[in-house]
Every structure is written in structure tokens, then in C-alpha cells.
Image (cartoon, helix red, strand yellow):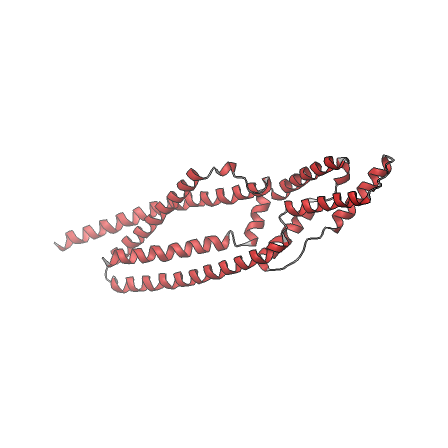
Length: 274
């Protein structure tokens, strides 16, 4: 009975430690998100999405697409994405710079009007157009300053909770293993069996989670806010599910092997004692 109680305690403790570490190192890690953004070609896709949205406003204004050309660059998008993530993860509270966009937009409009011998009587309409373009840029890169502090506070609270959970689970694992070794110091076979049970359980859980998520979510057709964010989400989910499959298979095989060895040794020992 002690063997199974110990296995249960280990499963709970290791499960909490694994889940806490996974979330901390993925969703709550700015470095991880930036790395995945590069892999998902996030900036290029966002660049294309932004210019597509610009074109819609340009057509409505009666101007040509050339007035929005070169107003932003991929490097600009990278810089502003870093600023937004810093606001989320570090509480930097820094606003993105849009004066350069407005300046380039004004220059393009003036050149367009000059080249086509046009005069605009209502300057306010041009200012409205510029404001719409800048706001569209902010919306596409998800810059919402009024929400930054709220998101940062949520992330800080989540990190604190997960760090405490990791600390408690590590202590629980150490205590459980010490007690188990004390109770079974003369029977290493039971230790092997318990480790096998724990490993098998997590192998099955990992494979079950992967199968369940794939059956519920059509990962390849996920759409969140825009195409660039959707591609990033697809990459993050697919990559972690692949890890679940690999880790699940390894843990399952290892667990079954340890259980077999433990039971075989225990049966052999019983036969020798008869």
C-alpha cells in the first residue's frame, strides 16, 4: 500500500512541477515568444497584413496606394513588438513611436498631390486619414496601452503562483523520495516499480492530452485576431503537442520497462525465498 501512496504523491508533485515549468518557460517567457515569432515568420506576415489594411483605407479616401508605401518597415514592426512585449512582461510602460509613420505619410501625400497637380481644400480630412492609418497600425500590432498594465499584473501574479507551486512541488518530491527510500531501503525493487508506475502514468497522460487537444481543436485552421498571430499560435501549439508525443512515448516505454523489471525481480526473489 505504501508503494502506491508514494507513487500517487510523486505523480501529483511531479505533475505540478512539470506544468508550472512548462507554462513559465513558454507563455510567460518573453524570450520564448520572440523566438517563436521569428520561426513563424511573424513579422513578415504582420507587415503584409498591415499594408493590406492600409490599402482599404487608402481606397476609401480616394488616394492611391503609393501614399502608404514605405511608411513602415519590418524592423519597425520588430522594434514595436519588443516594446509591447516589454510592457506585458516587464511593466516597461513604453509607448510605441508613430511620428515617423506620420511624417513619411505626410511626405508621400504631398508628393502624390504635387505629381498629380491636386489641391486639398479640407486639410482636416487628410489629418483624419493619417490618424486612421496610425490607429490601424497600432491595432494590427496589438498596441493597447490601457491594457498593458492589467496584462503585466496578471503575468506577475501568474509567475508568483507558479514559482510557489514549483517550490512546493520540489520540496514534496524530495520529502516523498526520502520517505520512500527510508521505508524501502532494503528493497530497491519497490523503488524501481514505483518509478515505473509514475513514468507510465505520465506517458499515458501526455499521449491522452495530445490526442484530446487534436480531436477538439483544428490546429491548422486556428484564427486569432489576424493571420500573423494565428500562425504564431499554430507553431506554439503544434511544437508543444509534438513534445507531448515524444515525451509520452519515451515515458511510457521506460515506465513499462521499469515495472516489468521490478515485478520480474520481485517474483524471482519470492521464488528464491521459498
